[in-house]
Amino acid sequence: MPTLNQYLVLSATLFAIGTAGVFIRRNLITILLSIEIMLNAVNLTFVAFGRALGAVDGQILVFFVITVAAAEAAVGLAIVIGLFRHSESLNPDSFASLKW
Amino acid sequence: MAVVASLLVIAQRNPIYSVLLLIASFGALSGLYVLLDAPFLAVIQIIVYAGAIMVLFLFVVMLLNAPHEDTGYDARLRGPQGSGAISARSGPMRFGAALAAALIVELVWALTEGEGGAGSFSGASVSSVRAIGRSLFTDYAFAFEVTSVLILVAMVGAVLLARRDVPAPRGGATGER
Image 1 (tube, each protein chain N blue to C red):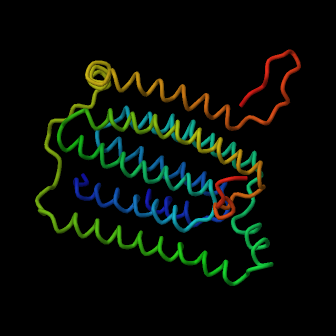
Image 2 (image 1 turned 120 degrees about the vertical axis):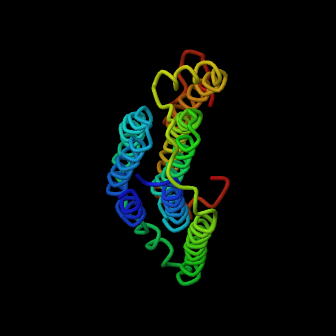
């Protein structure tokens, strides 16, 4: 049975991986996927603490986080589609201007 | 396993492989939820994340015909201002790698430096779907409703953003955006 600390270390590792992905990768879709990784790391922390405290609130918070992540993914992908239609590229460096 | 899959997600150059590996990572996380006595969340994770969100990502990747990373970028920037653009790009990359390394070192240090006794879980676990549902619809009812409104707004916004520019219909209704 893994302990709480091991879950927290795993969650921290996942969050760091997501952070590295956001900064290193130069692809809008991969950046969105890295954001999902970070959200999942936070979810794992919620569930681990909820289990440790014997409360059900952590799981409900994870439920809301998943819902918001779904909405964020939908809107983000719609924006990505719009940007790709405009300039045929997925590189965030090519969208540096605020006006097109 | 989740760590390996997530590392591979950001190591892949083809977005399709990234999405498929992220599904594997979510499966591993779902197994961890089962270990944490949260079977409801494990099922939700599989259905919503691996089932819905990742299919959405995959659909977009295939719809956009997914160019490999950096191809159009390098071709475009090697022309006029080659070396300056490349050095400007390696700056954020180095910063990101350093930030991630610092983050993980700091977090692991903080977690291992803390009291080492915070160990295994105590016995009582409330994880039944009945308890989750009761708490969700009594204590968190307002947040639940706000979430439904949020999903509605996101849906309308996504449709509006992804719409092509249609010419205004002739019947007097001005197609305003």
